[in-house]
Length: 248
Length: 286
Image (cartoon, rainbow over all chains, first blue to last red; front, side, top):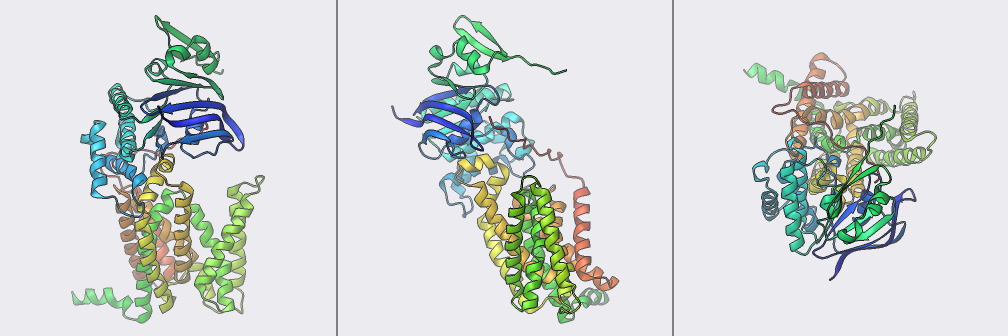
């Protein structure tokens, strides 16, 4: 096994203050890693360190090649005049000179990636006019065109319709078969159980390992704090539901 | 019919009119295209600050007798430095510090330009007068169109990728900071060249008004740039005609025509489904 992503004692944050620290984990080729944690727990900060956007405050991080990064869709500009095909074609920027126009082969690869994510009908639709799930699939198509060995996906299933979720799930399975390393932030504990490894964060690393042995009630409570209800089935905890507090 | 052609050509029979037309067309072409990216990157206030802040450099160059282009570039560098230094004081805040620094520079330039014993052309630097464009201004404007046009073509994909998704662009190997600096460099060059013939007022109108007019109606960045250039040229020519027939100041007339085009374009209903609101949310660590 060869690790495509490795972090050791990693701390990352903003203005010299760590938002997450003590992160030590690895993602092997052909492995999926689910990153669990509450909002503000450090998932996005970790991802920004993995893609090189943040310099580690402590520890080390190593990623093979340039990772493809699928940010939360809300961070894209919905008013920017681009089609689904234009967005997918942007992925080719990672492997071709930026000063030249997109080649025909790049646009063909982008069209094929859109087909792979089930959006061949929406190829020429304006990105901002698509549904949230469709937009996530377009961004996944852009990541596919990038041909990166490491894919980092920040809550790709958040607010996504079931059809989009299933399609993306199937593609992640295919990518695993292509021996890529896939790191995914998610809130869905049940889904995390289907990954090869889970990494639990709450401002620090709570746990890392195989889901069967790692996702215990104690780990989930340490990850999400006391404000959760852990729903259990025969095999153990399947879902952590945050309790909403309303201020009056 | 010949009378109509005659009346259309009349403002441009003289060398002054022809040079004014060429200056306006050249600057409008590049300003209208570049303006799309200036607005998309949220740099309209920055463009205004640089355009106003460069005035002392421009006036000093005219007083000393060195080319205005050098004065404009030096003025932009000085303005950028002053704004950067002023913005570092967190007690004041970047917006307020920029406003104070730029207003101070504009005031300094005004004091120099409007002093009684300086050459008469310096007043034009403030308010703009395309009729005063000379051959060197046209050469500089033509050079700008070629070089900035090539730069915009080369930067098209990085600009689009960063404007669309800054985080995603980073993973494609594009630094948002570097792309923004390249855009600022183009903006500075355009301001330094265009401001010589068109003044502070007009140069800003030609950058900001055309994209406001077209960007809600454009389906691609390339069409927004092309549309911006066409609108800027058309409004510029309308402004020249208005100035000629109504006998009003040419720079102000062109600027007003551009702003009118912006108001019309922004108010015109968008065809098809309404463009969605901006989707970028506050960036929260986590």
